[in-house]
Image (tube, rainbow, N blue to C red; front, side):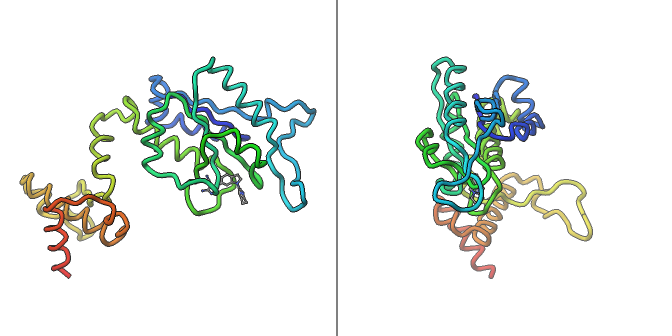
Length: 243
Ligand code: JD8
């Protein structure tokens, strides 16, 4: 899968050479191409922003350099299609469902802004608008990096361990159970006995119960959405009766 990023700071995407996504790039499973609209300006100062019509503080990104960048990318792709996403606080909240949908694409083009944001006519150049969440960033780049990571980890050949992505997807509606490794005792806290019992059925039951407990305590909204089995309801009743 190819990720194209239109950004004033293409060097920020060098971080994707780190770790598993670096390996995925080396292996050709993903291809990351960050490009700056400054390259497609025509004036001496390489201007990409200007003051807002109607007055007010700050600068607004001009549509021309963004449109020229997208045209260039279309030509470089030789007619192969892409899906264009604008990162903005005004977009729909990014979720795992977006990551799943994007991971089916051959090519995804992400538009990142800075300053006070985009000239309204840039919105007409994209297929959808996405927000990372209800907090204020300085620009779209950190949101794009998170979106790329969430999407790329779903691709075949990216995770290394082929089981992990599928394994987690059926559990994605619940929070994860507590995990332990060595040592057996740390600062007076012991690893739960059941995990050292070798009883795999008991371990699976304990893990499911602790997932349910943690989700109930921290993210009851997720529990509403989860489709729970009869056994899950038994475990939830046990949790309730403990209190
Ligand atoms: C793009 C400029 C800066 C500063 C308005 C738009 C996403 N979840 C998210 N939070 N913030 C962004 C985001 C912020 C951006 C731009 C995305 C382009 N800014 C802000 C305050 C005034 N501009 C985001 N996705």
